[in-house]
Amino acid sequence: MIELSRIDPLKRTGGLREDDFQLVKASTLFEELDDEAVVSLICDGHIKSVDRRSTLFERGEPADHFYLILEGWVKLTRQSIEGQESIISVFAKGETFAEAAMFSKGGFPVNAITVTSCRLLIIPASSVFRAIKENSEYALTIVASMSRHMRSLVRQIEQLSVQSSTERLANFLLSQCPKGAKEATIYLPIEKSLLAGRLGMQPETLSRSLAKLRKLGLQSRGNQVIISNIPAIRSSIKSK
Image (cartoon, rainbow, N blue to C red):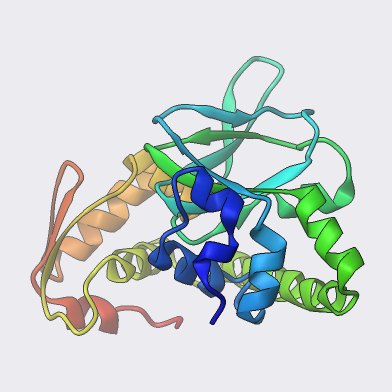
């Protein structure tokens, strides 16, 4: 395994911890790369901690870097002519965003705003392009990784059309529960309106879906969700 001490720029900016590095390697974009390739691609990056509701970039700014979320949640938005915000997507810990814009060598097509306080790994485009020039095999590997990433996004879109709103909510809640648990108390990491956007539904639809799941032993108080029968919630998901 590559020693983290080789990632000198990252250590100077507060340190890429071992668990951070494992999170990077497990992300869809990097999961098929070996340690040396990952280090080559991220070694010029830096870690940044930002407060809630911070603007990371605005539409039209040069897309010369991309992000991997180490902690927290980020939303991508567009504004209408009237100034109304539309949520394009919401990203969580372990996910990357803005890499496609980086390869297009244009401007960011959306705005990025932190939903919670975040720790972010910011990777410059120059680092990726340099690594590709130094090792041409990385180009094919990155293309394959981005293709897998795109397929993952397509699967998410397909899930929106195949699963009911209640099933999508159930899936999300189960993903927040400890593995193997029969019951759990969890706290929604983001506002319900943003969670609705993440799951491709309106806030009122989210409320109706929560009401349906209450029949299976779920209780909701603010951002606290108590699930007394996890197997029942899991069995309610038909489109798996």
